[in-house]
Image 1 (cartoon, helix red, strand yellow):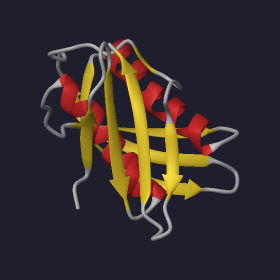
Image 2 (cartoon, helix red, strand yellow):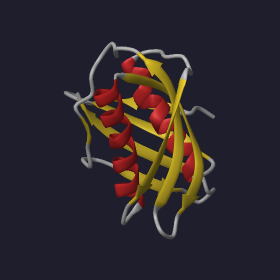
Image 3 (cartoon, helix red, strand yellow):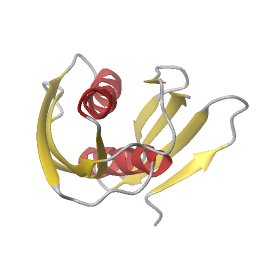
Image 4 (tube, helix red, strand yellow):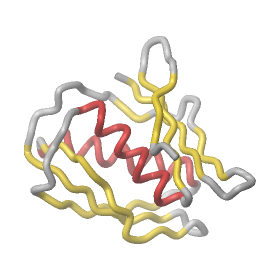
Length: 133
């Protein structure tokens, strides 16, 4: 099973991330986003807590918070580990690991366009994200 794959898109970057749980699919979505920005070592850990009104909003808000933190603090992340997830209240806590480093590329925003957060009949999760670059 692959963690994520990039999809064809004319102007922006689109990917799908996969997992046996929402948590794993989200971790892989963050990994896909980080792979665009460059490689980083795990020298600094930052904790995040996000709440939303849906899984889609939770996904966009969490990935957007990671991007904002990277822009504001000059930290390039390389890994995310979910520490708590509640699918009923749409809350997520996770830790991101990285280092102070300039990214090789930039991402303007995580969008809602063509966003999908789905669980299939075999209980496998897919998160599809379009990044504005």
